[in-house]
Image 1: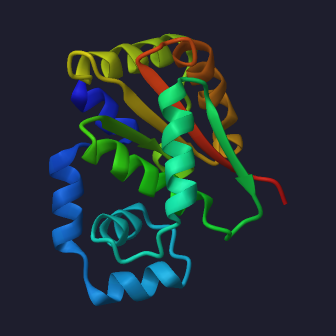
Image 2 (image 1 turned 180 degrees about the horizontal axis):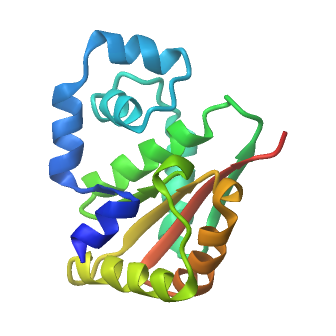
Length: 168
């Protein structure tokens, strides 16, 4: 199951977060602040605490995610939606959870059958008593897969959906 998930999404667990923080370079920090949306760069900088934290927003997002309903971040391009969503994912992992990150360039078309398998695979990866954070970055750019995922995963109490969508 983990391999199937990894084919279409990034899997964040404690080992991935730690490795990303260790591999971060000064050039990564510079690139991050030039609004480089490369997932590996963002994860390295955020895992290493080199971004500008927004503690109040982080705590609000963690509370909303803990409550169980889907959480949607909206805003203009470049305001930091993806970064704060990734910071929330890193915090989720640091609190013992697992996070799955999907973005347009990492996502292929997905029908309902594939989405059901994807959700089942995520469920099989969750530690007993835990929940997974499914982060969907710019889902409007991959609407077919998003629609299938929404239909199959949004009703799963062990899968928390957090997504960022721009509106400009």
